[in-house]
Image 1 (cartoon, one colour):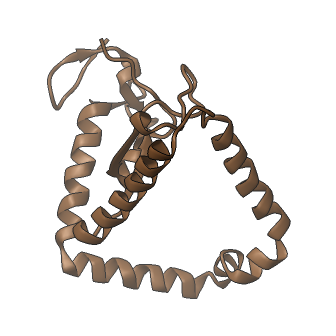
Image 2 (image 1 turned 180 degrees about the vertical axis):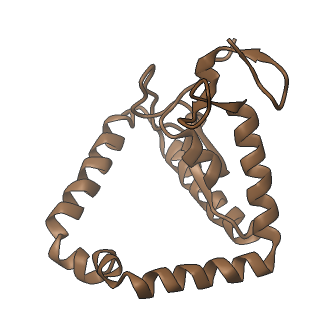
Length: 171
């Protein structure tokens, strides 16, 4: 057990990120506090126009200094590795198809499509990326969900990426 320096709650060590430079090898804030802090920091930075300009300049400088990486990310890479990219896309579609039950109706598919429309609309309105996320992951470690309307939610992209393929059991 370890006490979070931010919220002051005594939590299991599994609730803390690893930090090799720390004495006990764990970050001083629990995962929940750390995520909350990072989200707040990201929101503040996203509002700052000067930060966005600096970030754009930094990325432009990176791409100028690393043309070999840019080449790998380019259309040329896609054309040379078409089979690999097609195989990965097919694998993803097939795995999603296996998780889409045959009993879905046209209305269910319409609701799924509307979730993607909502994500695109929110991205346009709020100025940051939104994703359609599966509440119960399609290929989770503990459980595997289905690609059905009631298993979908529209959430900010950073939440979806931080969640990854995890499913938290709440009691």
